[in-house]
Length: 176
Ligand code: AMP
Ligand code: MG
Picture 1 (tube, rainbow, N blue to C red):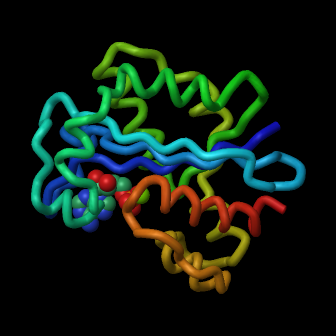
Picture 2 (picture 1 turned 180 degrees about the vertical axis):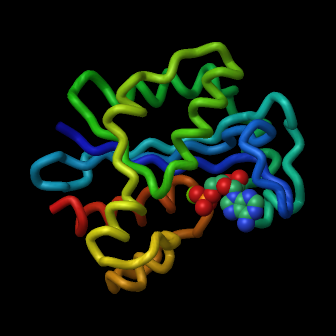
């Protein structure tokens, strides 16, 4: 079994959290061995949004993703099958920080007329919830969880691949 830690970035606007308007612009993922929790590989890909192809200034500032990054990328319909191919045939569990990423996958899959594998729902681990339960605290952001575990935040927060790497480090502590 493998753990696939995934973090998505999406189009966004200040004070708006409307999943139906938002579209995935980056998929970052880290694969961990189910037994040893060692890193087996990484997946990092920008995605070109189709409904609102122009990133807001707010979005560029939050994510540090540039307009040219998404302009040069493939659309979700092309990138998602690549993610699934990278995940491979071995048994896996999807790990995310909170439920947002799965909801956004559901919306983008519907939008592009592709199927979300059932395992993304049935084999999903919400690490934010697991963390809160194990530490007997309220659900918190990834940054706070890292601080509580004394793990330094590496890379740029709100970049999918960096968030996925940081969540993977939390996973290495929690999934032991
Ligand atoms: P994150 O994984 O925390 O970087 O967030 C994933 C996505 O959620 C971002 O790419 C944005 O689309 C959205 N998001 C996160 N924080 C905010 C915020 N403060 N305001 C609006 N959208 C946000
Ligand atoms: Mg993120």
